[in-house]
Length: 456
Ligand code: TYD
Ligand code: MG
Image 1 (cartoon, rainbow, N blue to C red):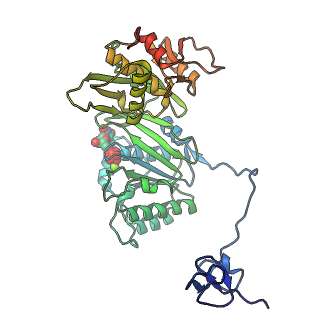
Image 2 (cartoon, rainbow, N blue to C red):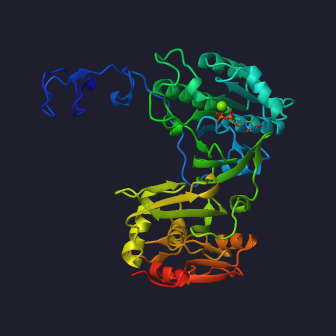
Image 3 (cartoon, helix red, strand yellow):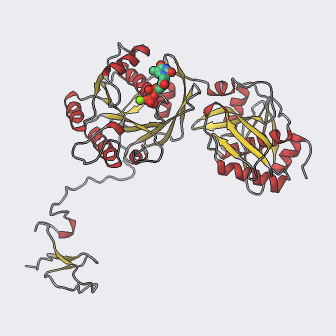
């Protein structure tokens, strides 16, 4: 019988049949340890002495059936979910405190319940009476959603095991408490453990779970970020508190496109869908003013028009201010540098403020040209034509690059009554749009075309 290789070097992994002070293979001292694995099977495949079961392997071609989905019947929500709620999926909905997460969740719970799911809503923050009061305000008190107010994870899982719901909403994950973890609710280890247990439970019990998470300032309390990698879908609920618009954005989705948005309006009777966000974002726009530009953007799969506003004023400070809301500050600095070095439009000694109206947050580089236009328009105190939309990416050389989905942007602009588009050269195959297209090669040419004279 072959000798059992019962000892392993913890440094190089070499197996030997007897213990020695020095590993013959790598020469390290005191690294040989006896294996604790059982005699059955090769030692290397056992963990803590136990072997696992054999996996069933498949190939790349065999298609598994798509997971079943349930529609909420709220188009803005279903689109962000990638076409409804996937069975046995785990979701995270993050957002600032007070932004409307609980309101959204209660409304979604009622919709899913109406469409046949058994839904349990567990609040760790509010009493049943408080949730019921909100339900009354939203006109949802007749909805068959079941309710509990608790934070003990063990009790919650026991209840879920008995009740067998199709969907459970946990509001919020930061209030949940696993009694076998020795730290306070809201700490990183508690949030992580609770999210992990709930996700696991969901996968093994054919239940979907939506966990609400507060975005927190850096500090002792764990934000939703520590949970993001565990779940299938991560949605963020964004908006300005003083504004009525709310945007639900998917930042990760294993079952659909990421970066999709749903637009809602917070009313006195809860969140209402906004079917045509472009009209909403432009509704507050008055007569053409210097510094105001309409950007034809794309959010996820949908075109969205919005207004970009810039203000440029002489600075009393030795270090002029650059303030941005709704766009990337680093990108603003880049656009100003290109304007200065390629077009002779300097911003030295000037404070610069940039704002995306309506509380929208834009991350596409296609907004470059609209931002540049707003900056120059504000600096020159010259309004742009009211009937024009602008988009295009700017490279460091000052050249304009074509952007994705040009045709969709143009169609949306036309739908909203715009007649002109100022943009990079349209990619080949872009269909006719009925708009007057002013295709520009570079930023300097754009500044000259729109503002008449080159600064020098
Ligand atoms: P909430 O859903 O409690 O926010 P979160 O769970 O993200 O902390 O809602 C917060 C705000 O929404 C609250 O200040 C009141 C307002 N609100 C309305 O304007 N209309 C409504 O119908 C409801 C229910 C809330
Ligand atoms: Mg809440």
